[in-house]
Picture 1: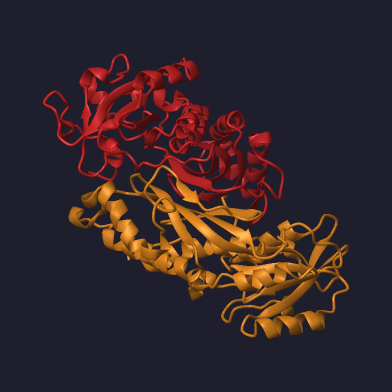
Picture 2: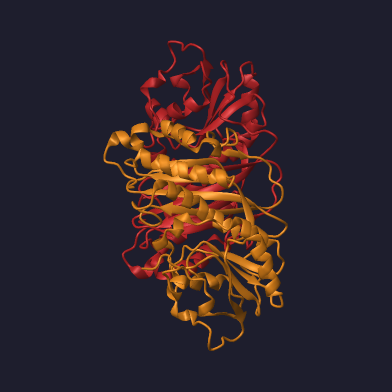
Length: 308
Length: 308
């Protein structure tokens, strides 16, 4: 569905800001708490939070993250899930979100309603309160940026740093072909898995895969080591290949390092018991010197932002 | 200064994402704390906050909130100050911000550096930690959306609701001609004033003026009352007129209601002692029936978003 309409009566400009904000509150329904904890004042008030918080921000932009082929409900859902995936990667649970929307005046009300209904359904499912936002108008743009707040699920927050030489590399789910298969908007953020992993002290570092394993892996790789990956161990989505699994991006799976010396069989058994339906693959190790059989990652590049 | 360059070597696409993030950390300098409390992981970690928090989000978009005539440092500063003004309107103090950036690949590095240096200088001045963000690429867009977190300055958070019939209306500073005079990027957010007002129990409701007094006033006006404004009492910027003061917008001044029965002379004296350099004007009252001498606000409309 195109976000634009040529009929002014069906566009956001037919409503104007005040009525549009009213419509958005209706569309969000119970996903948006009442003032002062929700939409309607200069700021939203957040109830006191215990302990540390987590914060992340990610957008969806027409022409970049979605096009006319994606249903608007799926766009709203994807916006929240991209952020949830970042939170999962540190073992967090979501609490609150605010949304900055930029719309062309010709944006279709039907498109926008479905975008918000998709966002609201997803927010209810993951218990995220949409507490505020902003709407700006700009020609030719339909974009939304969501800031998500969360809390650690336990005592531990897992960072990208912390892995060491000898640690094993694991990945959840399947990699590659995300756009082709529709995974990029159908995926389930790995919140439960992330929370469980954060409470296992043998998990030393973690991140989510958004730009492709080959590129994202650099952030996890400790100085002085290399990631020795085994091609046959990669959990490749049916219809994809090694290159796609390494470079396609938008996988929204967790990549993590498990301490050297861990009883991997026991770790995997514990995982299977807890998450019988989420695939787990041990794909390699961090080593000082690459063995001849390891994949040469220099041949592969993940999604490069801002490169012509 | 135009945000775009035709020389690829001078553009963000010449750097690519990883180097660009490194450059942004340098440009932000001490305004961005080290990981895990800053840029560089899936989420940023926020230290535990005591009590309630405030959250707001506002963007700046090329072609809408700035153009080639505004210096990029001023754009960065304006982005943060717009949000600080929202916080001031509830009596809050800022703590933390995250930034979602959308850039065309041809965005000039020089423009972006100055944007960030302006943002960083402003963040240091107001003690805001820029803890994270996101960079997305989209053709023809240069836009930044900032989410600001804050805390109440005292026990009280002042909302837009709470005014009653008989309350007096006050406004800080001067109104009108914000764009023409450059006030829209030179303004000082009224954080000190907002904090002081929030701790005065006679101040019943407050907001900041961003879309023009005539429009914004609706949000403060209690049901069943009307705002009786005196034209001669309006603090009009030199070179502006009543219409400009009511409708231009981007004033970023505080508008608030003071309880009926207050000793206004004493209130004004206390203000002058505390803020000798910030003008304060009593511009009218909330009444049940408009007196003939009052301004007829139906003739004036503030800035209407999303109207063609």
